[in-house]
Amino acid sequence: METSEIKFGYNIFSLSALDSVKAGVMAEKYGFDSVWVPDHLIEDGAFVDPWSVMAVIGTQTKRVFLCTGVTDTQRCHPAKTAQSVATVDELSHGRTGLGIGAGEAMNIVPFGIPWDEDPRDRAQRLREAIEVIKLLWGSSKEKMVSYKGRFFQLRNAWLDQHPTQKPRPPVYVGALSSTRLLELTGEIGDGWFSWLVTPETYTKRREKIKRAAERAGRKLEDIDTVATIYTAFTDNPKIQRKLTESTKIEILISDYPGLKSFGIKPPLPEQYTYQYVTVTERYSPILVEMARQIPEEIFKKYASIGGVDECIDFIEDFVRVGAKHISICDLMISEKGILGVEETLKTYGSKIIPYFKEHSGK
Image (cartoon, rainbow, N blue to C red; front, side, top):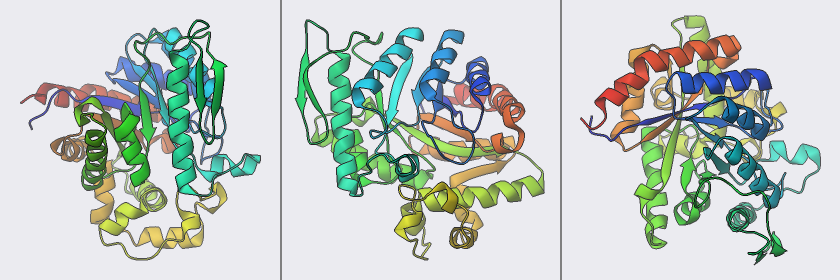
């Protein structure tokens, strides 16, 4: 395996605020390099305010990088987002990033917040939000900034709260398979936060980022492309079946384009894709039946449910195609809560992270 040192991240979800903090602190203890906290109001489990949680984690850790995975542009004006990131960055002594995406209906429509039906509008809103946030991070009373976009405007604006990192915190664009968002990542993003990728889809999507970066006079090497993967350590057949069934639904909703590239043919109505599906529809009969049709060999490209050796082989497939930052989504959280988190983190810290650190550069 030829590679430079691999970074490992841990995704915190479906835990209470206090347990989320515990998980973040433990992630650093067991050798993880980054911690990612979703920014959802509604999903399928407990979801906390990420800025509050990351602020507390930041004050109880010294090394781990903290980032949202990811926030959106509709629920919070970019000026407020910029202020939140800058505040947590100060509290963590310069270890905070912003993960931001185009948003999804489940967190917007139920609350009466305007929702851009046209994906082109969502992409443009995201571009403008990132540009506004970056401008405000570099602003001051002596250096006011102005901006005029379709969705956001600034006029002689500035922030009094400044980030600690120089020149600024990194911005990770959350993109599933959208060519618009992948190209936006290449043009102005510092990183790409993926979700439910396979080695094949990760490679194809990263290539789109690369081409867009080159057109913008940038290099792919300067963009942190994060491969977010699902894993679970269990030899219990009943739990394995349960996790497989629920994860197949997530794959269907989140990466139908990827499934199509593997030859999965049943058409998925747009209302069931991730940007549009409601939480109440996630386990509708049509989705459950379609998910069951995903072959086992395709499923195993998306997730590793089993033992340590299987997990190492699974991650090595991503490393071989150039992944340098692996972010773990721990499926056992749904089974064991914070106790399952500690078991998973210990396993990674004692067996998996050391393996990849030892083999880096070989």
